[in-house]
Image 1 (tube, rainbow, N blue to C red):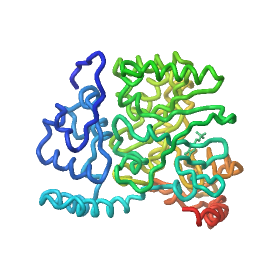
Image 2: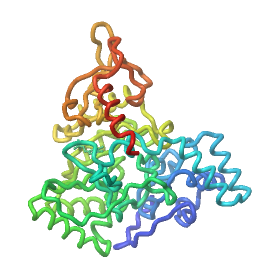
Image 3: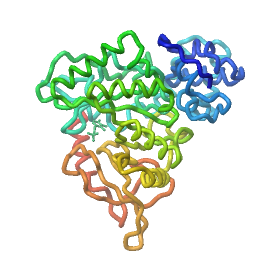
Amino acid sequence: MTKHTTLAPKFRAYDERNFEHLAGFSNLSTDTRFAIRVLARVFPFRVNAYIADELINWCDVPNDPIYQLTVPQPGMLNTEDFNKVADLLRKDAPSETVAATVTAIRAKLNPHPAGQVSLNVPELNKVRLTGLQHKYQETVLFFPQAGQTCHAYCTFCFRWPQFLTDSEVKFSAVLDIQPPMLETIRIGTKALGYWPYRFVTDPDADDLLRLMERVVATGRHLAIMAHFNHPRELEPPIVRQAIARIRNTGAQIRTQSPLVKHINDSTEVWRELWRKQVNLGLVPYYMFVERDTGASDYFRVPLARAWDIYRGAISRISGLGRTARGPSMSASPGKVEIQGISWINGEKVFVLRLIQGRNPDWVQRPFFAKYDPEAAWLSELKPAFGEKEFFFEQEMREIFERTDHLA
Ligand SMILES: *Cc1c(COP(=O)(O)O)cnc(C)c1O
């Protein structure tokens, strides 16, 4: 980590074509740099100078968590697929050949998990509104066209198909109405972690803050849903300045992150993450389970371990940080939280509840799955006590049947 912060750096994105211009990357071995180019054909790859110069600890690469967070890793593809793409690049194969191979590999990586395309897209007068997702009654997700990018891409990102230039299915829309029922607005963003200058020194930083003030002045609750994966992202003075400026507008900052192997899979990291957040006035909101998409095998953390980490961290921070719910799986029926591991009538079980559901009546009902130390997603769990299925499954089938014709 070098410590030279210019006053107002200009944002510039780096990808597989030019990442070697960044000092840290230029020192990597030829093999490593080639591997990054191979992987970046399949997974979105984008970094910037702030990440390379201020966040990554190059003495600890490849294990450094921020390096794992932003640079595609060899373990993310199986050897066969990796070699397929590598061979094509080595022999300078025509771009259509590479593209066809890459498309086939991506299709195996469950690009749209949890029924996002088939179940969540609302209809108005028989027209699918593809820039929106409406899964839960009280909230709608809006994907503004101009916002479908980030200042860098996370290797584990479950929205990875959003960032492929040749993606078939992208959620994006423009909004020019002010729906009267709009009471709270949340802006999900990774900008505080990846480019805090957005709120401090970028040419339109002040415009953005004034806009936030205007939203707050209309009487609406404005929350920045900030995505921080590792406490190191909260250390640079520029982040702290950005946080203070946002909070001065009257907007709240809540935080969320998945629990991801190689990046933040330890109690100490989460305790530190939440402790720092509370000290900076942020409100911890969700700890997610890494989704079953993309290179999920590389990043997966078994649910039993996720619960251990959650409990270990939450039990050792101030009560102000115990606002974080989780570990939570954003699965087809809703957000399923692991509440604990218990013995009931001689059977070891996971105690679960839906903290959000496609049907509001499902929310907060405790239910039970057989304990399985390796299971890492809802689809890998079996109901406990010899039951055939979980209580919501019959209704989920009916929902699937109703929406089958749409996707
Ligand atoms: C998490 C999520 C929401 C918001 O749920 P809250 O419980 O209100 O935080 C809304 N829509 C989708 C699709 C979600 O995954």
